[in-house]
Length: 215
Image (cartoon, rainbow, N blue to C red; front, top):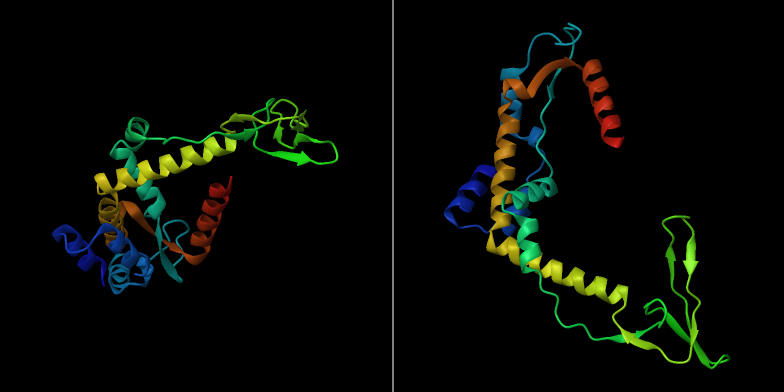
């Protein structure tokens, strides 16, 4: 299914956002499409805009579509994702468990030879950068909610709220449409988005861009 057809079905409600994103993931690279190749033939210049070379020339894109994850972040932010999550996140009841009376960790072990419990938890000291071990020995565990259990509970609650937000604001459909619009801009090759370079100059620019992204 071509992207234009996917967009039409999205706008008409025939296709869900989730299904559209599955189709888009399988649609291949923009520069492999017939439309891109036709547009390239129309837009490519006769000399390298950087060095004046007239040999083998390429279309160098100075604007590239964001990744799907970047589009998700963009669309969610536009719809007030973080504020909505803060207001609507719901952590359910969490059962207390056996924890260390000293540090509250659930990393406790019963040592038969000592007839007591020992805490084997450790954490990174932000000041020294070294691991600090609790090693507390005690006869009976305390009851509480460990950091691990609290993290898991909050993680699940945030995931549920996140999924509810995506459904409520139809995020997948908006992301799919935005992705197609970016694709359309890419293959249209607007003058401000492209330039004609020789292979050598294009390679240097691409290499510099990769190095910049890594730093």
